[in-house]
Each structure stands twice: as structure tokens, then as C-alpha cells.
Length: 400
Image (cartoon, rainbow, N blue to C red; front, side, top):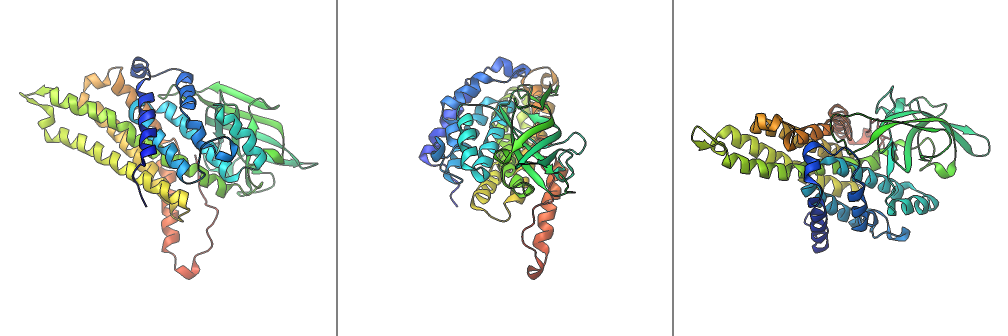
């Protein structure tokens, strides 16, 4: 397992780091209020969408192996300089959609939706119901069979990244007549008959990431809209959302870098009691803890990505660990930065904006409780005697 960047990937990382460094710092300090379409378009011009799409469908991606490491290098480069999570979370959502299509799409679906992704069209993934949250097996969004191999979709979803502006959405639903199984995945165009787009959510942070709700009332569908086999979507869902979990961990870790560098400079210059505050051990602990947590999350994310792409049985657990490690690094680090800067950090500006945005990692990609449950389930399976272990089940996961 080689976890060093190739020469090409180093170049990719540097190019996207340069792109991120050109974003508007004044808007960053107060929290950008709208989706950054300009930078999104620049990402496409730099070839990011092509990296996500297999060569057979007009991209430059090398399939589930090297191509995703190129995407990872680009994402890490962008996160090292862009300084705010919103657009990065949009990129992660787009990557998850491309990965889902690569793994489970039919040739016709790949031809259609990859073409849209290459144009930069925003996608969305609708998982959570207002009444059941991310417990997808309790979903009240139903796919109902109709004559002539058709279906209708009914239900509501909320907290969906890109819902107000997406071109198409992957909806997690349940096949009618099933209790807690029958999970299905359907691709729905945003302008389809029966789709209602809710108001844009009002949030604490990440104001440049538009989120909202979608309602479905007898939306007409056919087999061409279904990703995978109807009623057998849970295992597929877990596999492609796992990529996002890795990327949440990696992005969170990488975002800490520039904030930590500035905090170290501040601690060297800020004097108390006749000496720089960096000389105080409690300040050193804050700074070193942030670095340790970020490095831990970064390397855990690399390892989890290797496992996911190679099909390792422990990959799902490692993806949850990567997400938790990144979330802890950025949230704990953001609070420590606020303490370090004191009233200056609490004022409206870069540090307080970073804290507001960082708190999103408590829930994006799944809550801590959900991921600990996933990890515990994996640990329990590993602890069973070998001869009594069943075939890998279709995960009793909550997902997000």
C-alpha cells in the first residue's frame, strides 16, 4: 500500500490549492451567503468533474482505483487553501453521486447523468425523512409499483444538500409493502411532475451550501429511474456513502491546517506577562492537540479510502472512524482556537465563522452516535466465532 502522492497527483493537488487560494477572503470572514457558482465552474474548467467520470463516458477517471485518488488529491489541495467547508461539501456530494453511478448505474443511466455531471450540473442525495431522520429502514417515502413496469414515488425528504438548486436527485425510499427492508434508490429529475422544492434552509453556518426539503406526490417513474435492483438498495447505499464519510474526515483535517498556522503566528506575537503566549504550556497543548488530531484524521482517511477501493471487509468501519476523527479534529480545534484568540476570536470574523462552519461536521455524513453504532456492530461481528459468522449482512445502518 503506497500512501504517497504520485508526481501527477502532486501537480493536481498544487493546481487545486492555487484555485482555492484565489477565493474571496472578505466573503470568507463573514460567511459567504450564496452558492459559489464562479468557483464551481472553475473546478469544472480545471478538470475535477472529468476525474470523477470514467473514461468510457467522457471523463478521465480510471475507475474505482487510481481515478479516485486523483479526485482525493484535488479535494485535499482545494481544502488546504479555500478556508471554508461549504463548497467542499458540495464537491463531496457530487463525488458520492458519481461513485454511485459508477458502481451501480446502467449504461443508459451513466450516459445521461455522467454527461450532466461533466457539464457541472449539481446533484443531490435525499436520505433523511422529517419523521424518521437517517434511519432509512423506517423511511416513510415509498416507491409503489404500477402496471407496465412503472412506479410512483410519494413522501418527503429534508436536510438535502443542493435541494433548492439541484438538477437531479438520488432519493432513498422503500418499496411499498415492505416493513424495514425493501430499500430502493431512484434518480429523479428536479423538474419532474409531482416534485415540490421546499424553501432554502436557514442555518447556523455553511451559508454557501444551499440545503432544503423535497416533497414527492405520485411522481411517475420507470425502471430506468431505479439505481440497482428495487428493494435491494441498502447495501449499495452504504457502499457509496462511505466515500463521502472518508472525504468528510479528510476535508475536516485539511481545513485545520491554515487556521493552525495562523494561530501559531498569533501565539508567537501575542504577549502576556512579558512573554509570548506560545511559551505557555496550556497554549502549546491546544496547538499540538489540533495538529495531532488533524494528522490522525488525515492518515485514517487515506487508509479507509485504500480499504474501500480495494473491497476490504472492514472498510465500512474504517470510513466511520475517518469521519469521526475528522469531525473531532475540526470541532475541538475550532473551540480551542476561539479560546486562544479570546474576545478577538468571538467577534464576527474568520475565527467565529470557522467555528460556525466547523460545527456542521457534528452531523454531516452522520452523527457521532450513528457512526459509533456502526463501529460497534462491526466489532461484534468480528468477535463472533468464525464458523458462526453469517455472510456479510446488508448493514442495519442509519446513514446520512
